[in-house]
Length: 112
Length: 116
Image 1 (cartoon, one colour):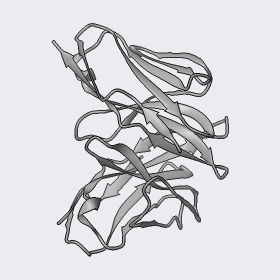
Image 2 (tube, one colour):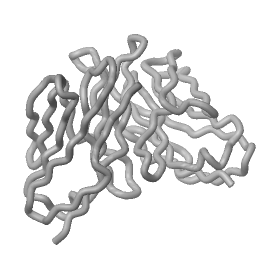
Image 3 (cartoon, chains in turn purple, blue):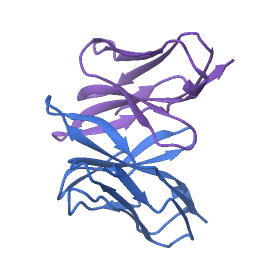
Image 4 (cartoon, chains in turn cyan, yellow):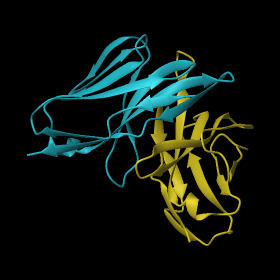
């Protein structure tokens, strides 16, 4: 089966740094995504990692270790608008087709 | 580009009724998918499609049918609605990148369905 784990909730302070972890146990792993979802809205894409290492995009960075089945999303210089859920998703190959499955998401609360 | 559109935005059904949730995209994406989102459960994959004429089951396909007669449209049918299908439904589309796999998904605004 496929399993993706991430913390349910986290709290951080405006201006600080926070790291959201994601671990996965899947077969046919082909890449990992991070999405942001504000309450009542659709998810929006943040990052995509296929190879091991760090991908940086402005205040957001994402890291992947395929051998450890582990990823993290790093958010720097936190702003109040970063209060949202962060969804880890894994692309898996099954029957020669790719499908994308999500973890349950981490709700991030930013305190002033 | 309108992106991914979903209709209706809200729907209330009675148990046993059937209906179709519409999803369309104008980005010529080959990959389309349907998810449901329930509190504390994240996004769960219902069905997906890698191109016109091809569909496959996701994690929670029971009670739902899909078809993909065109690249643009990917409707989701509820055959006989049940209260357990009360949820927010998201449709998404994606394109194949140079590595041969599907890249970021673009999501529609969602349909909020209540089954009484």
